[in-house]
Image (tube, rainbow, N blue to C red; front, side, top):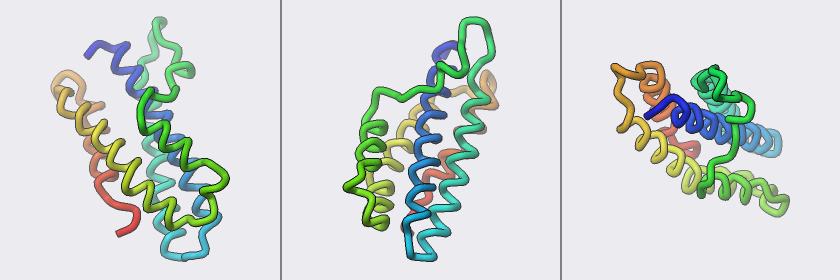
Length: 144
């Protein structure tokens, strides 16, 4: 994978993680269930950390504008995130968290696993290690 393609993917992953950080954070403030608030807070923090890490994987070379690289992927994940942001879906946080677990988390996990299968740790060790971390986190369900 060339550096421009890798940076484009990192930018898209950064966008997804930022959206999930914001989305789960907003749910956390709406929930009245203390256990769910803790779970959302933990996952929200992890998504924020992952977004920062992905931003760091965007190459800083003249051919790449880091800020413009952080954009929505053309995927079902972006559509699912948009759907879960809709005002009419904001009342039942438990149902939203279940939708996150059943739709968004598996799709993000599949993208990360597919990317990890293509990355040679000898050629791009930092990306391989980051993918290992985000995959391990994404494997954990929000609602256990």
